[in-house]
Every structure is written in C-alpha cells, then in structure tokens.
Image (cartoon, rainbow, N blue to C red; front, side, top):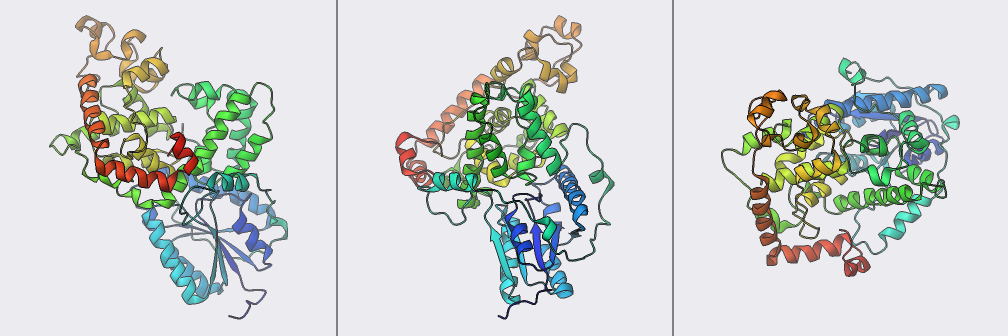
Length: 496
C-alpha cells in the first residue's frame, strides 16, 4: 500500500473518551501532519439499547459541547452524526477518502463489540489503518494477572504528554446535529453535568476540603454525596482519564491530614481497572454468570415476580432505605457504592429474583454506567461468582447505621416525613395511633414490607451456601481465580 498523500485526512473517533487531554489517539493523529477529522457518533443501536437512558445522552451532549468550546480556540469543529458507525465511516470515506482511523479500544457491551468487528473487517477491506489505543491499564486478550499490577503502575505513572492542539491541521466537515432534542440541551436539576471543565472543577473541590473525611464518610448515602469524589460519571464517559486523577492524587500524597483519604481513594482507582479488566477478559458475563455453574441457580419463577420487580424498580418495597436509594437514583443518577450493593443484594437475595432482571434497570439509572464495572460488581453482589464473599445486606441495619436521624430517608420519602427517627427505619412497627399522629398509614400512604427480612435472609443463606458448595461451582471458582487473580493473591485469598 502506497503512503497516503499529505492532504489525505485521518479520523479520530471519540467514544467513551470525551476529552482533549491525555488522549493518545488524538495526539497520534495530530502528529501525522495530516488533516484531522474529529468524529462522534450517536449510534441508533446504542440510543435504543436497554442499558442507556436519556440522562446518558444528555451527559454526552454536554461533554461534546464542552470539548467544542475548547476546540473553538483552535478553529476546529467536532463532526457529530446520528448514524451507525459503519454507515457513517463509509460515508466519510466516500466524501474525504481518509487513510487512517484513531480511537481508544472500547471495553463495551456486546453491541459495541459486534460493531467493532464489522469496522475492523471494513478497514481491512478498504486498506484503512485502524490504530486502537488501550483504555487505561486494561489489556486486551490478557491470559492471566501475573504481571497486571506492575503494568497498571507503569501505565498510571507514565508521563502525560500535552495534546498539541495548536499544531494540528483540521479538516473542515459539516455536522448533522439537527436531531438533538431540547431535553438533552437542558441541564436536569440534581444530575451532574458533563464535560472536562466540570470534571476538573469537581476534582479540585474534593481536595479543597469536602473530601478530607472521604475514608469514613463514603458508606453513608447522606454524607457520600459530598465526601466522595463524584468523579465516576466523568471517568465513565472519559471527561478525565484515570491516569490524570491518579497522578493528581500522587502529587498530593504528603498533604497533611489527607493520608487516610488518599490511601482509600488510591485503592479504589486501582479497583476501577481491575473490574474492567475482568469484564474484558470474560465479557460473556453480560449474559451469563461468570461462574457458569450458577446458570442453574433456583431463582423464583412464580406469577408474583413481575410485580415484585416493579416495586423494587420504583422504590415501593416497604423498606425505607431500599426505596429512598432507588428514588434518589431516579432523580440524580447517583448513589454510593454500599447502597448500590444493598439494592442488588435485596433484589437477588431477599426477593430471590434473577440478577438479569435488574441489571439493565440499574444501568439506565446510573449516570456513571460503565459496563466493565457494572457487570462484575452486579454478579459479585448477587453472590454468583463462587469466589467472592457472600454479603446479604440488611436494609434496616444499613438504614439505622448510615442514616440514623433519617435525613436521607425524609429527603426521598416524603410520605415518611413526619415519622420520628426511632420509627422511620421500621415504619411498619407503628401503632394505629402513631400512624394517625405521623400522617402515614402503612399499606396506604407507604407500602407494607414485601417480605419478612428474617425469613428471606434465612432462605437466601440456605440457597446461596448450599449452591456454593457444589462441585460444579468449586471447579468454576478455580478457573475464575486462575484467570482474574495473580498466584500470590490467590494464596492469600485476595480479591477476585
């Protein structure tokens, strides 16, 4: 194949990497000296996919607008289309005859994996070089974890090269953005707004003071809203890179009074890539349990399943902490990690509903939905890996410990607003007189509990531990540990 002419364009395809800094595909494309097309696609298959909600596309649109404000200074324009990836690239190639495609590898769902295989075949056919850069420290086609931690450190500590936007030659194109709906252009109250500018402002505000007690306030749904970094949607959509966050953290390592928070946050940044790597290495967990023996787990299949699932989805289970967390997610797209784990635990353990019935619902609600974290975590909390500790969260205990005064509960459950703190965690224990006094009739104004926590937890323990001890589960556990945990950690019983 002959070398492309100097004026032949190259394309940078943005996906879940909506930033202009620490962006290797963009830097590599600029350094070729060829005119650069900056492409983002709103793909119909993804817009219609059950993992996604309007909140995600609003965040993406906000991120693109933030990028465009920076690009305006350099005379560059994002080329935005509503089209399938193959169709859009074929059209661009017909019009511009571009010679190379630059992007990050996407650790995505089945739809994007299938799409990328089609793009790869098309690129080979058209003799277009597709240069894919790894996402963070995730290694494609990794066979084991023996050197993975060392590699993670090397990637995260590698120097960040400034993107040479000023020296770029930009290719002029016309976007097709007439389909942007007004609701995407209107910020939603309570929901974080997308863009690198706000990502960095959020990080700065964390270190300005609100995050100093992160290590001890991250478990409460009330305090975590302020004490956590709140960077998760910005990391999920690539407004800021994990390397940028990690190196910023290292620069503050000796800040007085921050060590415990920095240690806790550093470990969670490492876990971020750990779980995405698990998904990359075993992406079939989108459809089946990572421990294949759990394909026969005895979930309920009775006539009440659909009704119980709906009550969980809309926050009408009769357990205040479950309902408050679910309603908060509907309104804000955010809830802290412990409460996410509790929601999955309640669905799969207390209600004994198949994890697959809830996985798309929470994906749509999480503004920070990241496939590579979502699926391994969902299955881990559902207790179907055979390799992780089984945790059955008691929603009453969590409520009493994490929101003792009921401040979070009253914020999201107005029907319980008058119920005093000792009773708000277990409102079904109110007497008839108390229901009248506090203007909340159980079974009318607020639902009665769906299940007996004691009985449901007992049944769940019997099911889970009985199944976990089967020969098939144990055999699969060994395969999982060999794939996702390095040998030294397996000996110590390390995290999988």
